[in-house]
Length: 84
Image (cartoon, rainbow, N blue to C red):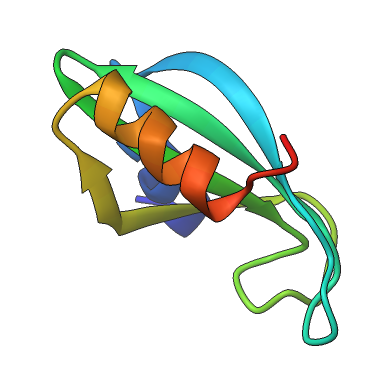
């Protein structure tokens, strides 16, 4: 199977709940994240240039940052991005 088809198929069944902005700092430029929900699980999906940050149009799916509820995800987002 094509790498990108397999990669993006990880999004099947997830619903986009919203979008948040990661502000720029001295180490990185700003970027955006989609807030996804599947049942009780909530996940953030970063919209990056590419899997290495070098080109246009790649969605990086972070499997390490899953939440058990939208409330938990919103609290983490609020604590991480207080200016949103």
